[in-house]
Image (cartoon, rainbow, N blue to C red):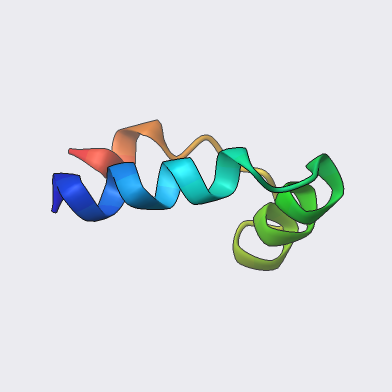
Length: 39
């Protein structure tokens, strides 16, 4: 749902860079481009 996505984006923008990188590495350790999975 778009509202949830926008709310999550606002939360993440407040996070420090290290926390964001840790979140990415936890959920996507190969840093794969996930764009195609958004459709």
